[in-house]
Amino acid sequence: MAKRILLVDDEPLIIKGLKYTLEQEGFETDSAADGEEALSKFFSGNYDFILLDVMLPKLDGITVCQRIREHSNVPIIMLTAKGEHIDKILGLEYGADDYMTKPFNILEVKARIKTIMRRASGTQPTEAKKVIRVHDMEINSVNRAVNLGGKDVRLTAKEFDLLQMFVNNRGKVFSREAMLETVWKYDYTGDARTVDVHIRRLREKIERNPAQPEFIFTKWGVGYYFTDKD
Image (cartoon, rainbow, N blue to C red; front, side, top):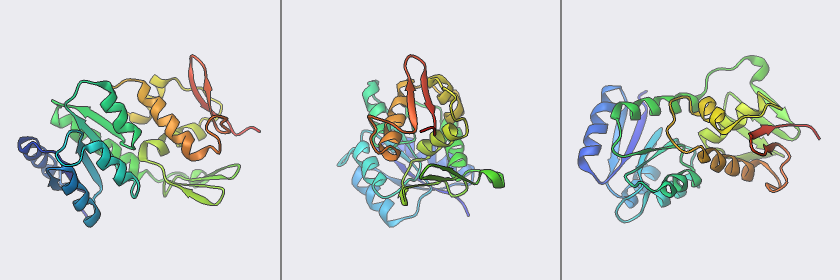
């Protein structure tokens, strides 16, 4: 079954170009021209991916992203024409998996969609690593699900990728650049502070007290590492 992508942008030429390119690749596409229409379509449809512009009529893309994240972990790439870094960080703060700045190369958009979709779906792991348990946290690599203390934890695709990277390399310190290379998997042109945003969000979800972490620690001046030692 073809994957369905919701394209949200108020510029008809951008939508037209994206639709043509993605449909040539076998994707099904739908579109919305403002934030309210995007939410209406999202909640009445079944989408596998969302390309979401930041600047939209009626309801901005940041708010749309935040409301979607309250209900779904569907992969989201934010599109922004602004040069201010804050827009990009805010997009990630509210749960976007990635961002691209306009004007963008449509072939790069296609490549990023495929990369994120592939990682979101996951590949079949070996039997030994299907489920990883760290104290009272259970990480299911097949379903890409996390359970902490008997409660399900909702992670975005990138948050899960980061957590899986950490638990598979316990004790290893990763620099921000190394994490971008390992998790994002392509020539990433964004600010390395993007990693800090994701780490903070991940800590808020899996740490009982993010200010006193039990799992993800900071190596000042170097990066981050994961440990399951008491």
